[in-house]
Amino acid sequence: MRSGNGLALLLIGFGGLIILGKLGFGLGFLFGLLIPILIILLGIVAWKNGNRLLGGVIAVVGGFILLGKLSFLFVWAAAIALIVFGISMLGRKNHTTRM
Picture (tube, rainbow, N blue to C red):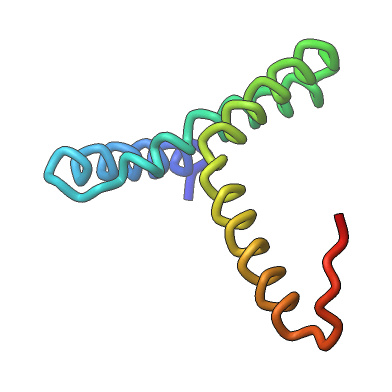
């Protein structure tokens, strides 16, 4: 395989995903995650090339964007934690409440 073939295959894959999205297969969420991940990777590349300040800023901005996209996971985790904590409180023998 030649050195440029990896990029060509990556572009073909992205193009195929875009076409699948236009045909009705729901890949919008994945594309919503793709941009922040690419921004983080761009920051890492800038960091490794010696521009640490710009690379760090770009990576942090990408991280905040990704955090915003995945914030629903934190809500789910908090809800599950509340349910588990409530169940564990029901299972205790000593039912004293602390306030």
